Image 1 (spheres, helix red, strand yellow):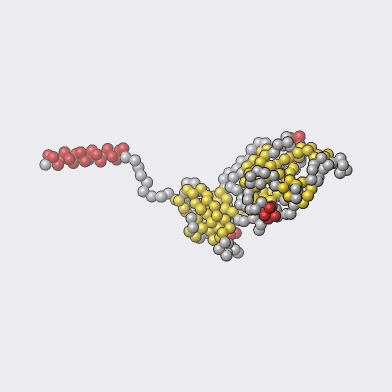
Image 2 (image 1 turned 135 degrees about the vertical axis):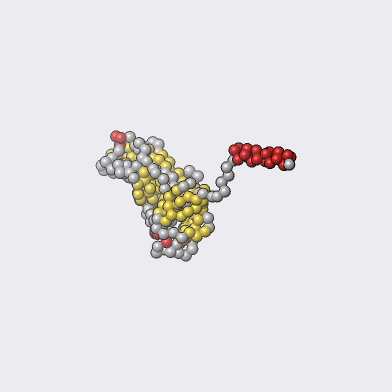
Length: 268
């Protein structure tokens, strides 16, 4: 009897010690609320579908979907079952928001993870998606980079006297493709003495994926741009589906191949 009592006391002490020192283990998975905004644009006339990790999800406009946080593969299908978006998005704990974005018919729709973006003094935050089919073909569908050179001096007059001076160095926006990126990159504003009433403008050189200049008919290729920095400090932009052409805007600038139509979709 005495030995049984001692064994019981030892068991009780071990149990209490284990409860005090043992690690607390979660026995259930926590779910997070994912807000998917404007998804009705996909499931409306197109009758498309949204898959999360290969499983179809029933959604309506501004739906809330409960899923486990972490890396999730989001796939958008059109009405014919073709994949129009297929990306892995990291979903944070508790709540997260995805925005369905369709800019033009030339740019595939995207799901973008939304986050607050504040303006930065002396900078413009910008993200760009390529909607130019001609440029996409020239690059073999690969991503490209844009080096932005602002106009810092311009002299008008007869063609022989016209003069344009671009900034000596430019900021590079990297890895532009057919899908709208989630993250922004930055452009440095030119000095105050060359800013114009509406903002600033210039040309952005197109570099191939290996950072070598894109040449078209032996000419370096550029995108013309203008940026309204007064109204926007954070921009979502796209390249419109316009054909390029040879351009010689001033006597001191060798002829280059220029695309136009770097447009602002929305911003703040």
